[in-house]
Length: 133
Image 1 (cartoon, rainbow, N blue to C red):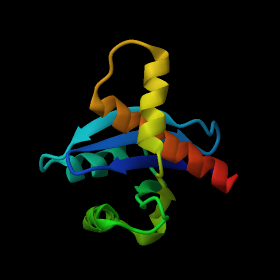
Image 2 (image 1 turned 180 degrees about the vertical axis):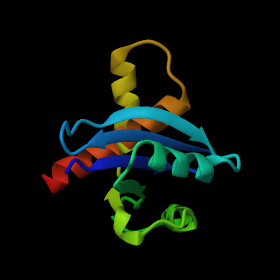
Image 3 (image 1 turned 180 degrees about the horizontal axis):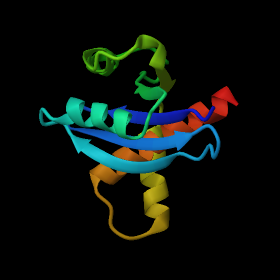
């Protein structure tokens, strides 16, 4: 059976989204959702549309590796999706936004903050795929 993964880089203004599956194992940034009241509905739609078996969520920590206020925000947001807890896994997101911005700069061209968020989601997902390998 092929598992399908949806990754989220949850922020207070935007949510980066990426996809992958257990066969190809390459995380692809797909979208950035605005936190405007429709984000939960859109995430649930993506889960259903792509037949997602596991939701991977970036887990924020401070530089000492400890949870932060943002960690609480992310956990509360994910809990509000009302999904089966067994279908959710958290993946450390330390420095993923910094790495995402670096990658975008190296590619050249213009990018926006939303691009950083979806690339960060793909890095979170790729890190997860490497970890479970």
